[in-house]
Each structure stands twice: as structure tokens, then as C-alpha cells.
Amino acid sequence: MAENAGELADSGESAESTTVVVIGAGPAGLTVANLLRRSGVDCVVLERRSREYVTQRQRAGIVETRAVRMFEAWGLADRVLAGPPHQGILEFRVDGESHLVSDSDGTEGPGARLCPQQVLVQKLTATYLADGGDLRFEALDVSLHDLTGDRPTVRYRTADGTRHALTCAFVAGCDGDHGVSRTAVPEGALTAHAFDHGIGWLTVLADAPPPAHPLLAVSAHGFAAHFPRGPHSSRYYLQCQPDDDPDAWPDTRVWDALRSRLGDPALASGPITDREIFRLRSLVHEPMHHGRLFLVGDAAHIVSPMGGKGMNLALYDADLFARAVRDFVDDHDETGLREYSRRCLRRVWNDQEFSHWLTRTVHDAGDDTHSGPFLRNLARARLDRLFTSRAAAGAFAELMTGLDPESQSDSVGP
Image 1: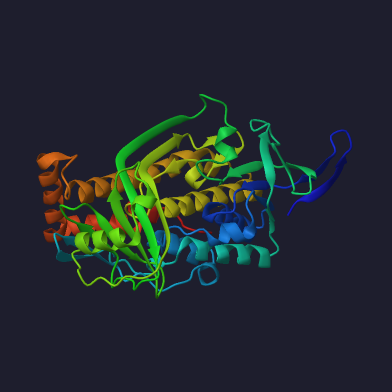
Image 2: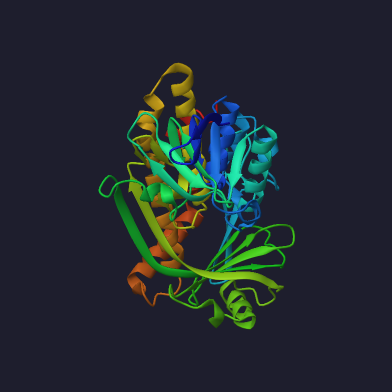
């Protein structure tokens, strides 16, 4: 929590001081804040949106095994995770033929959980506030200053026009791809690696029965997917042109396309509550810090949604950052801060490769209008290997769980 440092009469700002200012109250920022709180490190969270807006955003729904075990290690799993365990089975449906693939690597301990982002954010928010955390919604005009000095300053104003200045030791930029944190870094200080997959998805949220297992469907009609979002709701994805218009997809067209691509003429429909089109893209900025600013989650990297890695990468970053700050505050040990970017980026590129592999496989294996028959047959061969090779299935499961040899040697949590 911030300490009052008095009024700055010359600027009219209310001046305060804390150890870490966290910009953004999504999964990344709230995880950072909760872990810092449990480490005894003071922090203030600034979020430009209202609490209602932040806690209702519909996003990814699976917290992978590594992240579940991280929350367990910090003693937070029972407080911040909700929803049933993920059963560890994915269904691939190729031209209507079903193939069940395990995404459990057989290790002991808790596994992945079906926990939509908005539920995770709600519980992280409630936990942080219940523990006395300082969370300030509707913080407007946030700006970052003196990032390469010993005491950066974060300025903002409240809705009533009051201006505030927070000095701190570190800033955690957790405000996403379009936030102010990364734009505060001078041009040329970061290198951006971007990739456009040339694929669009229509995403549909509907009050319709969820599937028995998360389902990825490949056919000549294009890619489709069906995921649970609760006991009575589902999230669907339909491959489309990146510049398509959601209004061009009325309910009848949506359900007809889903029944065709999922190979399920009897698929139950329901009221559609949300639909939007987005472009599949990937983006990595490196290094993931500038001076005392550390980028966490989407502020540093965007990953194609295949494999469900976006939110989980943010949780991984948050864990590493919180432990690095704790070690610095408690023991004056700067190792974690120096190694933060390298360690995060190893995981980021690993998950980018997996997501890219899975994205290309399920799209190239279906409609070959853009990929052509050669790439289509290569993708079909990859799927066949996944369905028939124990080694290939094991590698797939390892990547889906988020566990690998280095991540298992890294501690997760205190």
C-alpha cells in the first residue's frame, strides 16, 4: 500500500510512495499484485477501466497445469481458481472422424482447471482486496516517468480531476498490447517480432450445451472449435476471412456452419450472446524490460489462441517477476531481475512455436484454398502422427500442460 508523501504544492499532485506500481488489473496485473502481497512487498494497482468492466471480460477458459501448481505453491489455488478440473482429453475431429488425445503428461499433482478469465479476475480481485491490497479503478491518463532512474514516477488522475504521483522502485506493465506501459519505452529500445497468420476467427458465445471434451474440428469446409464455458454455455470458433464482418454471420449461418464443420448435424443451438471477429497474429517484444519497467503478459507478447497459451504465459511472467522483486527487497539479490527477460522469453518462444505448429496444422489440414494440397497433406501427416505415435502424443501433452524439463526445475511459487 502506498505511503502518503505529502502534497506537491507546486504541481498540485498528491504524492505517494510504494515499492511496485502495477499498471493493469487483468490476470497478469492481479496475479503480480497478489503474489507481491503474499511476499510482504507493497504495491498499488492502477486500472483505467471500472471494476465491473474488468471482471466481466470474456476470455480464455483453461488455466494450464503449470499455472495451477504455481497458485498451489503460493497457497492461492483454493481462493482464486474455480471450475472443474480439465479432464485431460482433447477431441480432434477430422472429416467427422473422432480422435481423442490426452493432454495430461502423467505427472503427479493437480492438473489444469476450466476457469474462464473473468472468473479468475473476479477471484484475484476479491482476494487482493480482502488481504488489504490497494487497487484503484478508473485511473485515467496514466503516464510513466524516469524509468531508468532509481525511483520511477507514475502519474494519473481520478475521475474527479485529482492528480496523483506515485514514486516506486519498480513498475510492472501489465496493461496489454494497447496499454501505456510499452509505449512509454523509447523507440528503438525494444525489438518487435510480429507474424500475421492470415487467418480470421469468428468467435461466438452461446447459451448452448458444452461438449464432452474441448473439440477441434478439421474439414474441407474450414476449421471450427467448440469449448465449454460453463455448465450451460459454450464458446465456438469458426475460421473466416480476417476482414470479415460479424454482421455477415447471422444466427442461422453460424449454426449451419458449425454443424457442417463439426460433423454434427444434430448439434444443439441456443441464444448467441456475443460474437466478434479477430485476426490470428503473434507478437514478441524483447527485452521484456526497460530500466525499472518490467513488461508482463500481453504488454510484451501476443500468441495465437491455439493451445490456450496467452493467459498462461501472463501468469508465468507474473510469477517470475514477483519472485524477482521479493528476492531484491528481502536479500538485495538482483539475479531474478537481471534474468527476468531471458527466462520469460525462453517460455514465450517455446509456446509461440507450439501455438504456431498447432495453428498451421489444423488450418492447413482442412480448407486448402490458401495452403494448397502440398501443405494440406503435410498437415494431415502431422495429425496422423499425433494420433498414432506415443512419442508424438507425449510431446503434445508436455506442451499442453506447460511443463517441460526447465520449467520443472524452476520453482513455481515461494
